Image 1 (cartoon, rainbow, N blue to C red):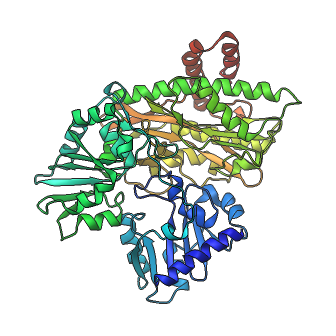
Image 2: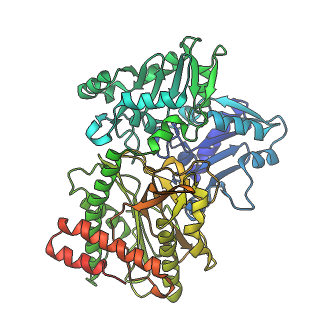
Length: 597
């Protein structure tokens, strides 16, 4: 932990030199994605905490790290001895960053941020909440204090054909213009890499676990301009972009281009998706602008509603992924039947990727695999370690949450396996999680329903045994893009986005008993129109995931008849879809796993 203390002191020396009293360090990049290249892992470098979501604040005397419930246990372990205080987001005793800074700094103290790593919306909120402290836009201090900092890498772009995506860039732009209804000449400045990849029908691998390319895009009355590394653009991609009238620029030329846009063009930006740095450059000279306040931005909102081609692609991806899961599950059982064989979490994380790679269409994992045995399952975003192997025993729970990218879709599946005899409490917990997942799957709801209204369907059974989970129940999923995609969500907190047919969302209730075990069962749902009555339109969900659910831990006495019917029908569907792709022994195995309860 001494190296962490040394790094914090280097930052403090920088703060003194720059006349700053504190610095706020997010775990993001200039495009505000969930995953970032090593170059941007500044919060991890300064703190030693390697979870995907954290904000570190360093003052001249103190330091603290804010993270959410997915990482409370992990952060407590990794921050031990660093002098960095853990701040548990949403815990009653936890102050906000602004409250904490105002409680320890004198009025007029100066708080610095890297202007490329905070959105315009975030900057405005901090500036208001920190007053009377001063919020100062700064440059990246880690360019100076981080020795041997990793370099930024660029991958080769790939074209997504219309057979895979179902819609051309030209068609998408027409729909965007129709939605915006802007009458005057305008330029929309877009910096969200997944929105750009979707709009331009290209994919890459600049960002770990996401099929993205670091890029900016401008579209509107000036035409469509893509700013991207020249190293990413091969001739095939160049031809594709040219055929869609997309003008290619070097990524490094973006800021110069933005500053020099004629002032007659109205600027459109999404305040939550553009850095305050870019925002200020775009408005240099008091240019007029309009804020795109549609949740997720106009592009993100349209991207969230999958077309028929994308939906069929998701179903194909789920099928390919389920075949790998079947082979993987059989491997686990056969390996553990040998009492002399030791199997570790890390080996299993590698093994499921191995089975997926047998499919020629497999493009890589969609997030860092979660393979968590026993007490590790109580950490929602736990990652297995090769250097600290955990052996799978023949008792308790094994929680596995993994997903993959295919050119035609992205998957995200969680299953919790009973590895031996379970206690009555464990069986009840497992069944309540399953009950919650089924309840949400069965939902019928009127048009305009938001995720916060649906959330209780999954949480209710878990509340009924006096337990709860703090993370969301469901997140959107991108089409070979980001496994976590907005703007829709299913969670306790209010989100103004209503569910619409074509939205694809996870369904993952859970129970975590810290120091003991974790249980999570996750399927992927497609929102679709159910019926129209005199009361209006109603929607429902279709389950896309095709992986059997372990029946070993189920206490069927606490399931209702509709829940048992759902489970039996689900398993019937799984067997019918998968069995043609399996050999005879695998079919026999699957028939037992999908038999009625």
